[in-house]
Length: 483
Image (cartoon, rainbow, N blue to C red):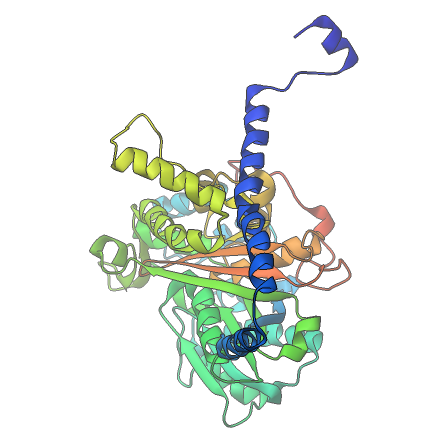
């Protein structure tokens, strides 16, 4: 660098910056090459078409439009925000655990270390039953926890969307480990007096990715039942499933899960497109359950003292990585620009066909396909791994990390707290694409892709109201707990 250049503030581009612009130029050229070739060709064809041919093409186009799947819109969504009385700091968690008298000193120390490295803040929420002395894990306490969360989210949603409960034609509820009789979906039908012919479904045992499974099911139902609304409710119960033993793989879930729920209103009514927030573009579900190791990596069972808990395998992160790879391989062709697909194909052919081992596998740049990423806030290590695997920035991961910090792991509803964060920050603009990624027992990795239909204004209320300006915050790798 010359002294003159430094003095004037003009610095030559580095090689990496030059390559960045070369890649961008390549990307735009490949992406628009189809239009550059087809527009002149179409003009030539249209000038030589006869009237009969033109009518035939119009009829074919009409039939095609009529037979196309119905478009599914997300009218609005809401996330449950418990009352301040349910706040549970990390110190409160340790005091409550210690007061039970059920955990050994070693188990309490193990939980403390997990919480110190969890990436959690001090304002997460726990059910009233577990914060009582002694803890109340009764069926009544579990119902109270889950119904408060579900009804709280639904009340907010119906108020925001201005849709009457009797207009809902499809109801899908998911809660993995709490499945009472009557079902949670029946509880919603009863509480809101939904109509007698509502199509209701209750998904259980499907883990933290069940929220996207519920969205996929609702989408499929909306494509065959015209002119209706679908309500998707995602939650998890902690009270009934808090583990009171000392088997370490089962203690982890006690430290991870916190109270939360989401309610999402979907519709296929074309008249609602104008005021809807998003259009659902794709849902991709991949399942690794045929592999025994994947199937058992998150497993509910009894410990050696017949105490029921959910055991998390030490192989969980590796299995989640494999599931993510399978999912993005399936999703990629639907969302990635042709330029990225060609680069991926070229490196694959070079490595597999021509055995050029010096070439590293090409990881597609999903930042060219999406503006916003909502990664299930399952834990700090999960977010770290996804950030590294997909080459995302701190900005892209901020909604997931701040959701983990503020609300903890709320299971399948965490994706909606994350999207609410991006909306509250004023980041979602018309045309933006959102990728939601969920992981769950079984083992599964599921994706949903949305496109924003309008700018999401800061004036729209959600679960981050009154505190969004406090974020983002710095999250230390270790935050010592003294209790």
